[in-house]
Image (cartoon, rainbow, N blue to C red; front, side):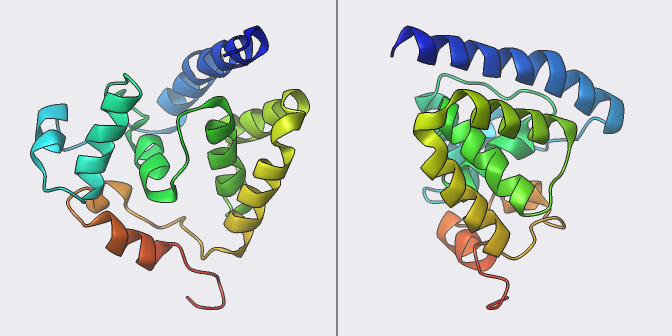
Length: 161
């Protein structure tokens, strides 16, 4: 990883913890995530919860209050926990109708500082724009479900929905 990549990653982490988390604490009541990391690990292979556990393990992450939905979106939408994966996820969500301060900041930051990923951001934007709205999804309810089934149900164009 280059120094610029490390710096951008540190800035994204700073924004998530120093802007995103305080924002979520102000505008949301604390979500009651009904699973521990151990419970996620014990779920059947191929479920969203088991894949969420694998996502945490592969990226050396843990459950972070207010970020559980965000991490589930990484798993369901298929975006890595990398600097470009984070911004792609936010581009998808913004284009899909999720317009919040943290989403806007992440997208603007990515577009301004990561020109080498513009084509990926554009692809994520188009994917989110054409996808059915995910605004009413109860992300926690997806945990015990097979990921493939969830993706088939949620990742559909507006015309197919």
